[in-house]
Amino acid sequence: MARIFSGIQPTGIAHLGNYLGAIQNWVALQEGNESIYCLVDLHAITVWQDPEALRAQTRTNAALLIACGIDPDHSILFHQSAVHAHARLAWIFNCVARFGWLSRMTQFKDKAGKDREAVSTGLFVYPNLMAADILAYHATEVPVGDDQSQHLELANDIAQKFNHDYRTEFFPAIHPRIMNSTARIMSLRDGTKKMSKSDTSDQSRINLTDDNDTIAQKIRRAKTDPADLPDHPEKLETRPEARNLVGIFAALANVSPAEVLREHGNQGFGHLKERLTELVITKLTPIREETLRLAGDSTHIDQILQAGAVRAAAIANPIVAQAERLVGLLPAA
Ligand code: TYM
Image (tube, rainbow, N blue to C red; front, side):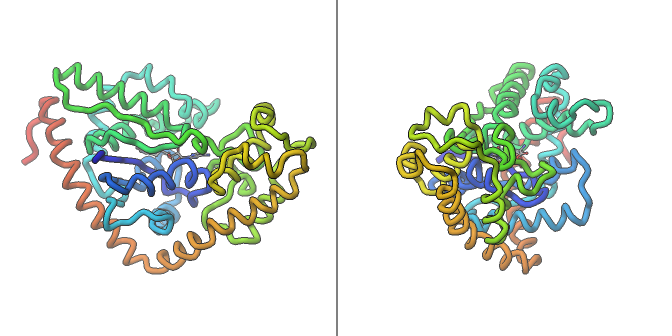
C-alpha cells in the first residue's frame, strides 16, 4: 500500500484537462492505497483571489472532486490552510531550496511574464510549499499532469538537500505518476497551449460543470485545421488541434488514437466533433448534477473538509515536528 498525495487549486472550476490529466487517476489510485487529496488554497493566493469567491470555489471544487468519485470516507479530502503543518514545513524548505533552483522554474517564468518585479514572493516560493505538501505526509506517489513534473523534481532536490544537510534519511523520494496519454490536454482555441483555468477565454476549456449546450457550442467552435483527419496517429504530430481532439476522444472512449482514426480518418472534423460532444456530455452530466446537489449543502461540505483536515493533521503534525527537531528548533510547548 502506497501513500498518495495530490492537490488542485480551488480557483475557478476544475476543467476537462484537470479531470483527464489528474482527477481520474486520483479516483483510480484510491483502491488499495492510502490517498490524500488537497484543495490548495494557500497556493491559490499566490495570485490575487477575491476572498468570497475563493471560499465559495473551495467548496464547489470539493463537491466536484466527490462527484468525480473521490470517496471522502476512504480518501482524506481537505483544504490546505486547515492543516498548519504545510506552512510550517514550507518555511523550512524556503531555507533549504536555493534561489537559483526556483529561478529556473518554467511555470514561474510563464506566470510572472515580463513583469517579475510585480508578482508576489509567494509565487516565487510556490514550489517549496508544494514540496512541503507532499513531504509533510512522507507521501511517495504523486499523480499529476505533465505541467507539474518540474516542480516534483525540485521537491526531490529539496528532500535530498535536507537529508544531506541534516545528515538524515528522513524524507523519502517522490515518484510522479503521470498518465502519458492525457498528461497534457490542450486549449480548444490553440492546440499549442495547455487547457488552463487562467486562460482569459472560457471557450478554451470545458469546465466540469458546463451545461450540455455550452459543451456542444465549445466543441463546435474548437479550432481545427483545413485538412481532413489523417488515417494514422503519426500524421497528427504537426497538427496540434487535431491531435488534441483525437486525444480527448480516445481518453473518453477508452480506446487508442489509432482506433479513433480508423473510424474518423480521411474525413473532415464534423463527425468527430459530434461524437466527441456526445462522449463529453455522457461523461460530465452525472458529474455536474452530483456537484450541484452536493454544493447545495455547504454545511455538509464543510463537515467533510473539517473531518479530512483532522485526519490529515494526525499524519502531518508528527512528521513536521520531527523535521523541526532535526533542524534544531525547540519542540513546540
Ligand atoms: P492545478 O490546480 O493547476 O491542476 C491540478 C491538476 O491538474 C493537472 N492539469 C492538467 N493535466 C492535463 N492537461 C491539462 N491541461 C492540465 N491542467 C492541469 C495538473 O498537472 C495537476 O495535477 N501546483 C499544483 C497543485 C499542487 C500539487 C501539490 C500537486 C499543490 N501542491 C502537491 C501535487 C502535489 C497545481 O497548481 O495544480
